[in-house]
Length: 305
Image (spheres, rainbow, N blue to C red):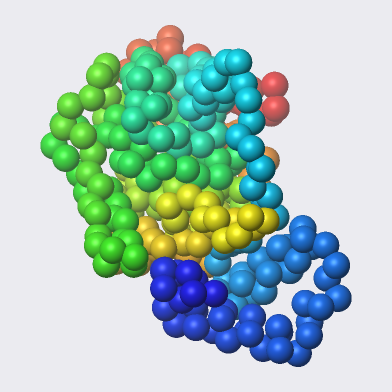
């Protein structure tokens, strides 16, 4: 409880959570929980009810008696998950599609991010799918955003850390490897599973008028922590000690989510974004042959072909 009181990002909510936990303990509500995992789940539920924070959690996570022995180093994120860059594809009408599943650690994922993001410059419009993106590393948010603005740095988002009483500003990069996609229309696909740093990316680009969000309202988690904390040999916890703050609105999307510009069921978001891109490209196209191709593509996409 002392760690929540000292570090949780919202002090008033921390006091409410601690008061509720102590009251539940005094009334014997936890005595009937015989095993560790259900106990951790109950504490998590009580903490989230008090704070309305989807990040905060307690885990049954026994500390190993001895470090595990291994003859080879563990597989890195590059080998298993490609730093969140799941797929890049060319859709009809030369619309680029990127399925981005997480925002990896910037120091580890920078090279892969640059390769994928530089390739997007080949397309006339871009769709980034964040419907299955649960978040990750906020500095990567600003780095990815750099590829959709010019070289003049743009203030993307801020991180406020209560444990240090410090605000860290995140800006786009003046120099990035490869080409940028500054002029292309950008569409971001969102839904209830879009969370945390993924929401920061969406909210930031929406407020900067750089992207159109298509889909459903996002999950609503704007808080962040510094990793798991060991509470005891049996339990760990994730306690948010910071929060994202948008430099335009001076607030965030905690508990409310990010509202899309085009509201459609999440499963239909790609079709709607693709259609929107094709229609805009058609309006601007001066080559008659390619304009007809764009019209045919839009008709086929609309009909489900």
